[in-house]
Amino acid sequence: MHIETDIDLQPLNTFGLPARAATLIHISSEDDLREVLAHPVYGSKAKLVLGGGSNLVLTQDINAVVLKIEIMGRRLLGESADAWIIETGAGETWHDLVVWTLAQGWPGLENLALIPGTVGAAPVQNIGAYGVELRDRFDALDAVELATGRSFSLDAAGCRFSYRHSIFKAELAGKAVITRLRLRLPKPWRPVLEYPDLKRRRLEGADAEPNARQIFDWVCEVRRTKLPDPMVWGNAGSFFKNPIVNQNQLDAIRCQAPGLVSFATPDDRFKLSAGWLIEACGWKGQIRDHVGVYDQQSLVLINRGGATGRQVLALAEAIQHSVFQRFKVHLEIEPQVI
Ligand code: EPU
View 1 (cartoon, protein in one colour):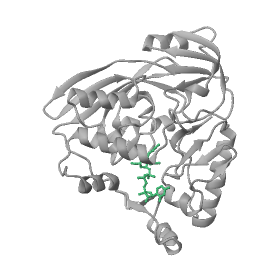
View 2: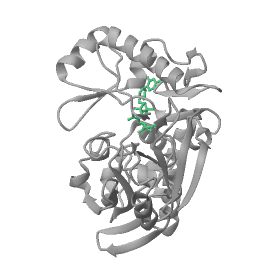
View 3: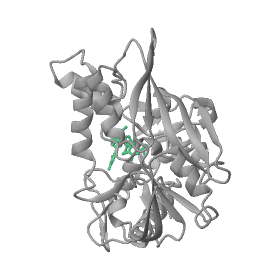
């Protein structure tokens, strides 16, 4: 393990928000982690786990010991008639893993291309895009309990995945570090093309039966047109979850907003497009202090240079307030706020 003190966290969070950490420890193995947890100085201190810093809003300096998870390695763990099982360290970059699996001839992650962040962060919020969620490709994970150093494994049921949610945002929040992930890529591969943006691509192009590489390219193109590159505009992806409402709530909102975009969920409720609701309240492209609502996708807040975490939250609260006033729907913030 490698220990650093008084660290600038601005380059370590994709929003580019200013904050300092008193102590940051680089963790490159499970043994490193156990060493920190048994350490006479750091062992008993509060810990903050940092992956790619892509789902984080930093509003203050961090006194907790920051654990930067850099456990690397990826391999084909096994192959059967109905799946490839891939094992990967939590510190690997998610998108690099997607590219690598495709290059190896193991399709299945193409819809999840270009999602920022590390592999270890993926299960925490059950990342998802273009019709696929992590849970659809999940086998199991290994983790270490911070209080005791005990290792444990969880299968999909144990992770209690739901939309942008898992046990790591609930009972295990701040209590465990994910160290390794195993993915199950089903055979035979089947394309997932139901999401409107991909359907449109398929109809427009000559390619009615696209392969995984083609879908990967489409997803990358769609994301690049809709979502800001964090290297250009600091951001944390979607800032709010898409709210889920029942039929009565949907009908009430539809009365005053007939154009509302909604999708039925398997449990007979409706997922509303938060981006649509925010845009309908006039926020698209708006700027406050150093923070903006992205002009191609209102669900994303961007750092226009020099923003603080508090300014980001102030804009988020103003958006929540106006959406609630108009539609009586509460928008829940998606990234972790510290
Ligand atoms: N829309 C608007 N105005 C906007 C944005 C969206 O009217 O400013 C409407 C459009 O009708 C659009 C629809 O909302 O067709 C859906 O928009 P989009 O396809 O961009 O998806 P989203 O629901 O806004 C979710 C995820 C994204 C993911 C995309 C694609 C959440 C919180 N966000 O966004 O995930 O990439 O679907 O699957 O579920 C992330 O989590 O960081 C993220 C980027």
